[in-house]
Length: 217
Image 1 (cartoon, rainbow, N blue to C red):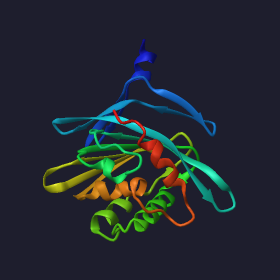
Image 2 (image 1 turned 45 degrees about the vertical axis):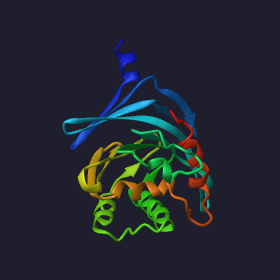
Image 3 (image 1 turned 30 degrees about the vertical axis):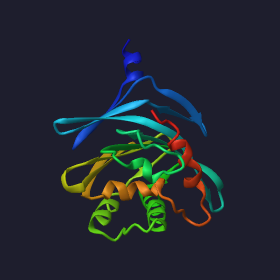
Image 4 (image 1 turned 90 degrees about the vertical axis):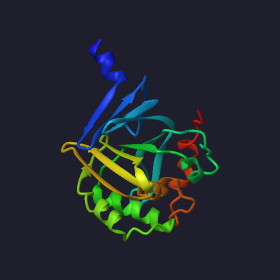
């Protein structure tokens, strides 16, 4: 009975709140790594509980020098409002959402610096100003390493005055959690995966977008 409960509910404690993945998980094995995808989650922020539902999941594939095409991570997307979910208009899918979650399950080893570099490249392609204090402070905390099977859970929720708080939990051999907030910070960060422009020579993000937005209700 205890094992069944653990299979249905996964909770991760954060210094600024916590997220609880709920429902019967779908288990898939990719590149030798077992990945569990839950149908919904609850993000707890102070006295509020924000329910988010799965909009889709996909494998991030990247052409890495010398290594060739590799499966980097499996990413699952969750949003509190699915009314605008449209695989043909990824950014429009974020409209009216007040809470979103991306869970990345690693399929290969990666340092925080490598993840930061990849995100920065994608954000710059989408003309996001990553020189702001908020982005500098956020990316300065990417001092970690991830191995296959480890997870990085990226969460955001809207506060007053269009201020968006981004929380990141790295679940590895030395778990850490950190946060940053600024106006539209979450919306800008999500452009790394949902933006309309892509890094030259890298079609990995473009290919995963339709699968991240295939569940409309």
